[in-house]
Image (cartoon, rainbow, N blue to C red; front, side):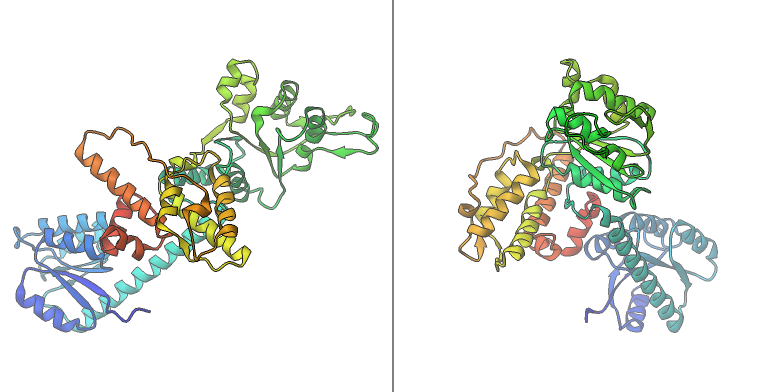
Length: 452
């Protein structure tokens, strides 16, 4: 628990009332604003949990237009803030209007000190409960994808798509370079689906010889071929009622593509050497690093199979395109492998972080993990150096920036925030210090750019 008093923003232009309320609320740190603009400055900087807002603000002290406008803007900036509006005895209509716009409560002038304290305490309690509920919900929602660590907006969008698609039975095609986390996302689809209590069966179509792949997928009866000493069920049948993950589907031979297409259409299989059809209820998730459209043009992949597999198609961005993820993942892998190897390493040297962010990572997350693991084993000092990593620093090529000044500034701020959060391993205080801003300002920027 913090020993610092909780902050309350008082938006009031009457100096006498300011002093009276500040004196009554001596248990809190009361920030004072006399108009809407000053109030918004305090909101952006401090993000107070509770705001006392007089509806009669200049330049309309006898009306409520300025106060209601302030109410609306405060809630746009900080939707969870609890706003208690101040009204006169004859102004109940505006108080009701403020409540309908999102205000937490209201009180009348002249105020009763004890009643006001009770209203404020209740507002803080509701704010704390809502915050705790959001944290618990986020934690519960993140569990099925806990093997994936990211702060990149594009990758977070992929995660949200996985969450939306998972409850359905639609076939999903995951497209991405090798090492981008396709199997992690496939497992996330399974764990978020109603089939979570059934099997998740993965098979790599590129890792099994063509002459064995058919029996591996569909199974075989005793005596179907030389060496078939007993009946054996295939991966498809074994995954019944669960999820079948077909990795590197682009390497599936053409004859098997036709047989897989029939299964996807009819949902029945025949074992090698068998004569009866077997119904199988399974969710199919496929993945590949290849461009299937080009394989279709070259006649190496069936177009009808492509459409069957890609009822939902999800592209996974490569690591080099994930803003902020390079440093974030590097710290996570360092912590994991330092613990596994029994090494007490503090972190990365500055030049090591620079080389990590400059490297293209063609092998994506898998390459980075192997690089960090090797560096943990080879490192002699308390920090991982650039020499330990074995990476050469290269200058990153900048894309041509947009001409709109606001877009340039927003993009620069977003990249700076992502970079600082990655380098600080998610530590908000450290990231704010690196950026030269306060923690509330950093939270404001994170909320503006949708970064969680």
